[in-house]
Length: 94
Image 1: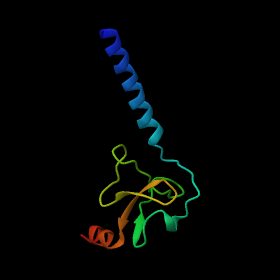
Image 2 (image 1 turned 180 degrees about the vertical axis):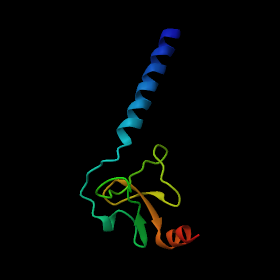
Image 3 (image 1 turned 180 degrees about the horizontal axis):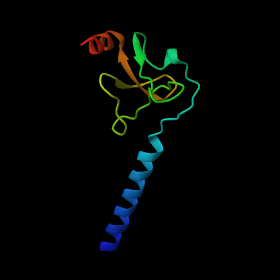
């Protein structure tokens, strides 16, 4: 009985590890124009440390966005960190 529980625990740990590290990728390449990454009136968060200022991706429950950005699913199936333009202006003017 203990061997079965250990096996299930090992499978669970492996599966969780696989999900976390397969979904959290910063260098996702896709044909998703910047105008379609976020809803109209919203802006995508850009990675300040990357040379090409790549859009920041997220995964709900796994990789969170910095405040005031929220994880938003785009039409191309990738989730991006987006924020409403009016919320951004208030957040950065304080």
